[in-house]
Length: 486
Image 1 (cartoon, helix red, strand yellow):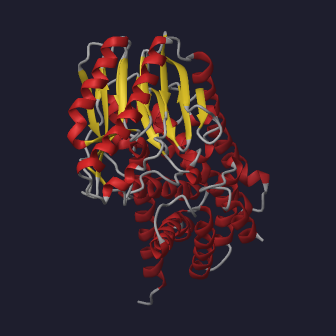
Image 2 (cartoon, rainbow, N blue to C red):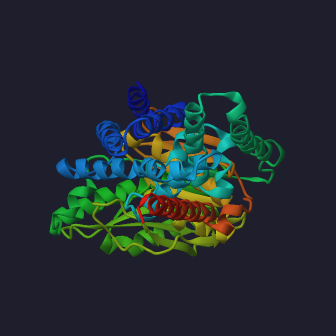
């Protein structure tokens, strides 16, 4: 029964269909199943069940064809079972209530290490399932994502420890109350942060938009060398598309927007026309006295790749940032990745910029916190299967680093949020017309513990797991030496 409950809940713990409470309960029942069976059979059956569920919940979300998709998902599922393996091998030799710390330490360590090594970054991390619990997710401003995963996994191990003690209150009272106190304290402190220290600065009006070019699919330029009259026709069509985006920029600036931005790769330009396009953007910025952020896709027809970049021009016409996306989605034909996101000074505060998939990598975005940025501009482009999950993930970077976030998304959810994760404005690409979002965003961010100590909590979990493992090995050797005849 525990396996059936775990499998049913796993469908709603990650991937496409997330129910927040399911993410708390599925590890509880899966851990119960693994603990109540012999190690090898229990882990194998649990892993196979997890693989089957993952094949379903990641369908369409992971952009990989055929067998590669199944291979990636299998690796994800096996990695997710490593904390259960650690608990099964180490926990019994630790004993007592302290044994309940093995599973959450392993959970946080595995999530951190897999995110650090994965080309998909933090996709699938437990914390994202709790995006609606604002008091709880304030925790990431201290521990990063890993603290929430620790709490979720600790509930599973505490519940299973109590189960094994027969739920005899005299035996389990101290441990249950200790976990309950920690969980309550986290929610209390998060609630206090929301209630007692909300953003109180002036705001700046930010307008963002998406305009889909008509009659031209720019991605056809990747594999076709266009010349002569055909090239002139493409140039004219792209010029008309650019005119629309620039006119929308003027319109929103006249309406009071201090910052205007389009979605990822929306400003399509030929490589040979790039300098002229930047000059036109600068003209609009000077004319309107606004900050104009154009997310450009720069094509050289027939080369098989494009440059995915963001150009930000200030009211003086000066180019403040020119940034090539640091983290292209695996398989995308992008070139020219930068190593760091830009941070620049605007008249109203400090501004950082990233592009879509960049926001799935906390190490990359941490520069915004280190440089005391107040706002992150995040032009993005998604697809229906990852909408709205991907945008909700991006807003965690603002809480971690004390920055507001404005994310304009082609084929997905656009959202603006303050540095506590409160959504200030949103726009659904598949429902709203036209694709324009306007938000009043705080001009001042805040300092966070996480931006200073980085992933210290994850390092502590790795260290604690190593300590428990060393103790378990020493215990095993001691037991073995006593058992051996002399």
